[in-house]
Image 1: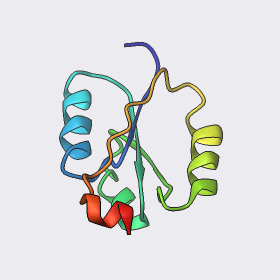
Image 2: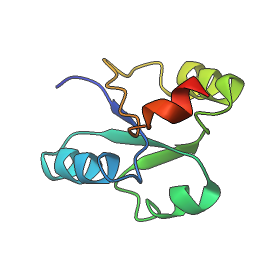
Image 3: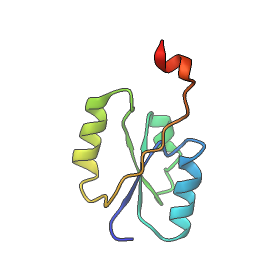
Image 4: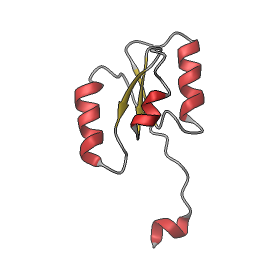
Length: 88
């Protein structure tokens, strides 16, 4: 794969294993995480991390525009929500 793979939710149940798989395959990975503590999980230097909470559209837009201009594709992975939460 050419370029850098951006993984949003990189510390989650799906994102973390995806990051680990990509790193094992030698892919360059940038992890989008919600908190500085989440970014610290990638302090070993194998993955670049940026803090941007999905609840803050401006932070996400800035992270994508400024930090990931060379990401070839995105695969949004969001947690499942209960339907009653989405409709209330």
